[in-house]
Amino acid sequence: MPNKEKVIIIGAGHSGGIVSILLRKEGFSGEITIVGNEELLPYERPQLSKSYLKGEIEFKRLQLRSKEFYEEKKINLVLGTKIEKIDKNNLLVETNDGRHFPYSKLIIATGSNYRKLPLEDSKKIQYLRNKSEAEKIKSYINKSKSLTIIGSGFIGLELAAISLEKNIDTKIIELANRVMSRSVSQVISDFFYKKHVSEGADILLGTKVENLSEKNAEIEVLLPNGSRISSDFVIMGIGAKPNIRIAEEAGLLCNDGIIVNKHCISSDKNIFAIGDCSNQHNNYFGGNIRLESVDNAVNQAKIVAGFLTNSSINFNHVPWFWTKQYNLNLQIAGFIKKKYESKIVGSMKKNKFAIYHISNSKLRAVEAVNNPKSFMRGKKLIQSQEHITDDLLI
Ligand code: FAD
Image 1 (cartoon, rainbow, N blue to C red):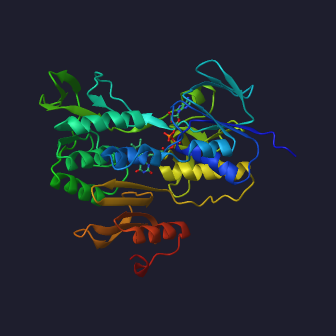
Image 2 (image 1 turned 135 degrees about the vertical axis):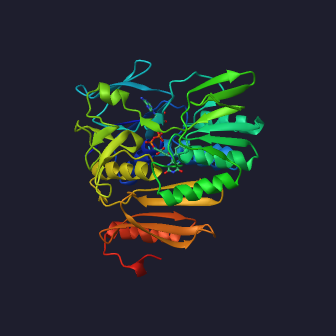
Image 3 (image 1 turned 60 degrees about the vertical axis):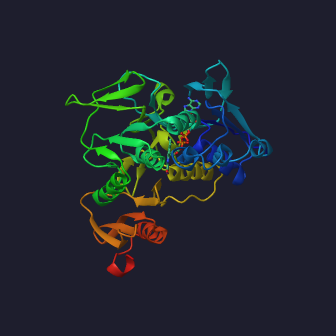
């Protein structure tokens, strides 16, 4: 019997691209259309703040698949087109140029976008989410002598590492009292802080930005104590928020992301949400959470492809993340909480170690620096939830 399902995917990013690929891999024979507002084939973003920005790899390497792949697999790509409205009663989506696409199943994969401070706009203030923004930052980095980065999350620090490697005078302004404060333990924060300072970064912690203004050829950051920091350009890296306007307007249940169940189904049974725009219960976290990672984008794409093709689904996946700064590759699995006990193995001096986070004799999280073996071991132990003894943590 021919499959009459019509799947529309909103967003040709990481999760949107992967879910289309997996649907075909699992034998889905209905129609698949991806509508994406960027003009580009689905691509992965992590290298935009790493090797692509350094000029080490070509953009083609970031594309998930070639144009021919989508043609061969009969995956329709409608690029450079934004979905403005979801009409869930009539099972239709409407594009910015007035076209309508009917669906039987809709997958929202609209990702997230950077937070902006309500400050003056200037060409000298850059954000990083997509290829064209990476190109602009690349050109600034290649011609500038000084840079101020606002925010010391993963992206801010990855950019700082590249900027310092290029001998640019680099300042980082962070509101919290430690770097990467939302995602890593104090020990890892301190370790990376020291590394950045030793490479020449000037990091101001616990510091708020009052205002930004252009002054001659430079841009000035005004701090609450009245002091000013001037540089050739500024990069903002102060976190992201989910792209959920169309979901909210359609009346889907949202709370920091589109609320979905374990199958990634939203409050409407025909609509799924995956990737950065979704918010889902996570057993390892012990509540609902919105994750911004490639791992989550791929895992949720697997869940939806599995659901729509009646294939098996792994619901015990342990979430993980990585960042690369200088020669330090940090991998994190599970969720870190302050109250957990921790055990450090390996050598911080030699830049190769791991921190295991334990509670009630169970492993809850692992942070590993240049130590993929301990990372993999930790990830397995988090999943198995077996009783932890010291000899297991090596
Ligand atoms: P995206 O890949 O962002 O795709 C969403 C797409 O939907 C975008 O193309 C967007 O333009 C489009 N869209 C939005 N609204 C509409 C609409 N209404 N109509 C049509 N299209 C729409 N993760 C890691 O795990 N490790 C890393 O080291 C890492 N580094 C990163 C570095 C950078 C610079 C960035 C930006 C992200 C990084 N991430 C990293 C995060 C990771 O890339 C994201 O979590 C992942 O891309 C999420 O996939 P997604 O499909 O949800 O969103």
